[in-house]
Length: 137
Image: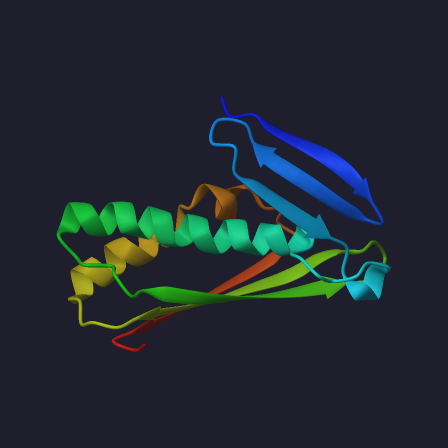
């Protein structure tokens, strides 16, 4: 079990504390929704969660395969929809891997990405598009 305490700081800002480690992060509503846009918004954190989860799960499989994942990166692009309810409409995940891996390793790593718990937990109305770029930085 993980506990995270969240406090409303006023002016559409929150502070979250990971109780075990004491690490803290702050959120701010985006400018287009009345906030200052000075920190990640709560929906930005969904995109962050997806990206970090994908790389972590791929890293676990890569370690088992003996593949060096160092330098792998991805870009998550979040698109919001304003109506009928403001929500995340689409998350594009562009994955870049700087070294060559064989076809079997690619297949296992891509499968791992698609089994990321965050990916699996997102509502089906949130479109998720994954693009894998192998041998590119």
